[in-house]
Picture 1 (cartoon, rainbow, N blue to C red):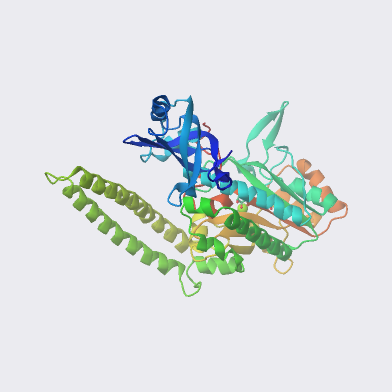
Picture 2 (cartoon, rainbow, N blue to C red; picture 1 turned 120 degrees about the vertical axis):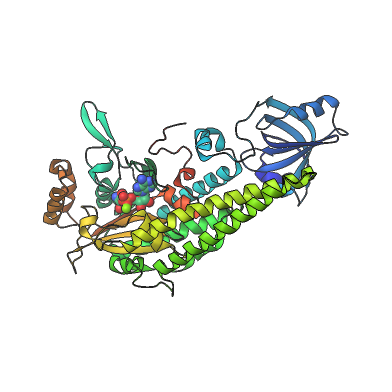
Length: 504
Ligand code: 4AD
Ligand code: MG
């Protein structure tokens, strides 16, 4: 019996098994918030209803003690989950002593070191459930659209996304790389099955500590024969809309737990703006507005507002700190003020982070050089102006991958498309139409100084029945991060692997 099914057991006596997520005692009563992985339920142990032995057992249930508890399920709207269990029996399975993650605020490094335990906390629980919905929705979408799921190898002999981010391993004495992308294999599989998708782990040796980079992440890569870049964009849009809609339908409770403003997600029904690289650059540089908002001047105003808010919050902190020093102040009032101060300090930390970030964003926008790729800051500047994902296409071919098709109308450009999540999140999908011209591909492979011999099999795809085709790669964690509006990608995967983090 699971907490998620409590409505089925109203007025019945049942047994739940789980962990004590909280416990409080008051005269003759023990309240245990039981967590069973499917939900939370308040269990009340009343000394008038149970034997002294049972009551004493209940009192021993420390934080994260595992236990089994029996009692009657009663509807109670005020309680978490809407039901309460009135206990008749309790059995402790293992008493947890000094569970390291207490209610008080912990630093992020501490939480990351204790990721194996942190996963139990409510917010992390909710994020993982949203991730699960997203994974399921991805398969559902592609299966319904007639795509075949196929798997690309993880040991590969060639780079796909540049040679600077390869993890090299030893494959029986030969150098092999952990897959950066299954795309090239996806192209081969699409020529056999028309529409395929891969969904697998992906590795990038990125020595950067940003809020978007993992060394190991999961990527979904569809590849479609007879699709040009515009068909590709249509698919990306339908796909993301379907996935986010499934989250809105399945995870209202989880979104509520993490405090996600769902209005932003509801916008997913609106068409995604499609901008060429040239148009996007004008917006970043403040040469063009989006719905009357200018990227540069709005950031300047925001910075001024942030500075004012910092001054105000600092003043209030000082005032309250003075106040709690007043002699004779009641304990309750001190506690109340201290809680306020803690909250204000958190607010202050967030504001100070913005005070550091905004000048960097401004600087990168002001100094953006036409022709270069977008960095994280540029994407942030651009996507803060939108409330739906946007698609930026037709990139200068020099800054994008070797396999992208040269635009037939202007050979300076390649038919790549990046999908950028709004609210400052930036790239979640990278893709495009593939080059089919054998000579141009050979030229590009040489230009990128890639070993031709490792790509011979790939070139065969252009020799034998080559067709126009396209595809894209969605970074699962990037999508989860935006959908949940997380401050950092590290919370979007159960056990993140990134520069400087291999444990637990
Ligand atoms: O833009 P990328 O590098 O594109 C490719 O790998 C193509 N071969 C995909 C294709 O067309 N089949 O990566 C695709 C996506 C990015 O948009 C981003 O969401 C995610 O993968 N990604 C990362 N996610 C987390 N950490 C990293 N270090 C990531 N690098 C890329
Ligand atoms: Mg990319």
